[in-house]
Amino acid sequence: LLLAYEPVKRLARLHVNLNSSLVGVRLMYEMLDRPPSFADLQGSAALVVGPGEVRFDAVTFAYGEARALNGLSFVAEAGRVTALVGGSGAGKSTTFSLIERFYDVTGGRILIDGQDIRDVTLASLRDHIAFVTQDTFLFDLSVRDNIALGRPGASDADIIRAAMDANAHEFIEALDQGYDTPVGEGGGRLSGGQRQRIAIARAMLRNAPILLLDEATSALDAESEAKVQSALKRLMQGRTTLVIAHRLATVRDADRILVLDQGRLAEAGTHDELVARDGLYRRLADLQFRETSGR
Ligand code: ATP
Image 1 (cartoon, rainbow, N blue to C red):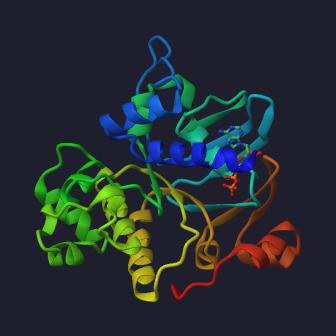
Image 2 (cartoon, rainbow, N blue to C red):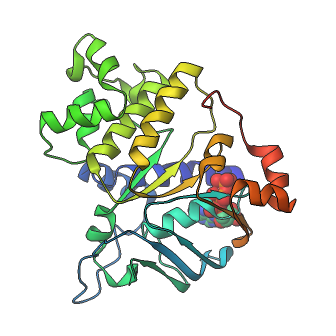
């Protein structure tokens, strides 16, 4: 049964990742057989993001019968990095899906800068959020067009600036047709690290104040990893970041770690605090976090 969820989850993530692309959105909703969006409440206003605080207030959510979140409360402080950790099925991906409102909470509420996300227009909500997975799907389009999905209609100068910030400009220029090079099906003509940097460039261009980052579980070679990590650091700068963490360096650097267990907040604190507590985090950390050459 768990295996059967995987493709659906992958599609859901793929979809989230494409939420600025009309083609992507249509296609994915059709594939997922889900309603394209919730109707905006009558008279709902656009989300107004100031500092960008994300607050979960006793959030409960179930996929049909199965409870995924069970009265989850936390605050992801504006401009800070909040890491989500927890065993498989703890509710990390569900937390992301609810922030982007792919589903509505069944109890409690989610506030962004004090506004219940059900009270604002869906378009304005999604405009303020970027989702980056390090296993990003790329379309068989040119490098330029793949980056431009972050903000359709962006100028060439903006695309190049985003690629520079993502440590991608140099390798792109070295491709046989530069920014016009087709990336191949699923980005197959690029290495894993290059694909990740294209995804980061896309998010740079999007320039949303709230960043949802799902770290890759697969390892890159040391040089690629270092380039990806330094690009991500730049991307997180000044944004409210929630990261589903798989790397030891990420949890060590996070301002706060939320340890989820069965849809609840089991522990919260910094890496050092949680290690000292010798509880669930300590056990997870021993099992889960990949030491990388990133530090
Ligand atoms: P992982 O680390 O394995 O990705 P997670 O912490 O992200 O896990 P979630 O994917 O949020 O956990 O899952 C929380 C619970 O909800 C689990 O019990 C899971 O089986 C269930 N679940 C997740 N997605 C769906 C879905 N689309 N339909 C039904 N149940 C789901």
